[in-house]
Structure formats: C-alpha cells, structure tokens
Length: 57
Image (cartoon, rainbow, N blue to C red):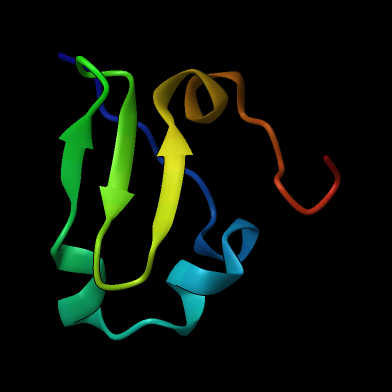
C-alpha cells in the first residue's frame, strides 16, 4: 500500500466540502480514480501520485 499526502487547497471543491462530504468517496475505474458522488468530483490516482497541482494545470 501507499499513503499519499497532497494539499487540500489544490482541490477547491473538496476544500469547500464538509468533512462528512469528503469522507463519502468511492474508488472507481478499476482502482485508478476517486469519486465523491455528493460533490460530483473526480480525481485520478495517477495525477495524485505525480503531484500535479490542479490549479496550475
């Protein structure tokens, strides 16, 4: 396993969400993405591992 730590500020939708909303996520796409259904937010695991700042993309 691996633990990834990235600044929450990189993801404005998640940053603005409540802790409860952030806690309700799904691993999808065969394990290649994260999805928050309450927020309609998706992140790729590859992007997180690469450390891509979504605000500069």
